[in-house]
Length: 88
Image (tube, rainbow, N blue to C red; front, side):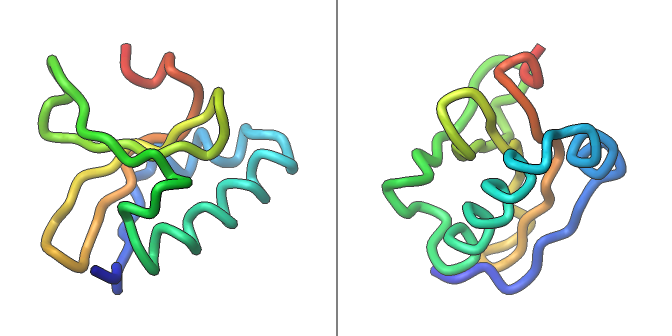
């Protein structure tokens, strides 16, 4: 499955801009992998639970995640980016 369209929430943009340059760069690398295969093992893509049960997330690195929802098989909406605190 390949992702052809990624939409971005204003919240995601706001928090992306606050990240260090290194994390931004790593995030872009992981997003490129995500576009080709959202379930690539190195992303550790997983569904969330609780109040975020409609959402998914994938790893940028051990500390940082991107939270998203599937709009269709080929479209996603990035909701948030940051440490595990984004789930609170």
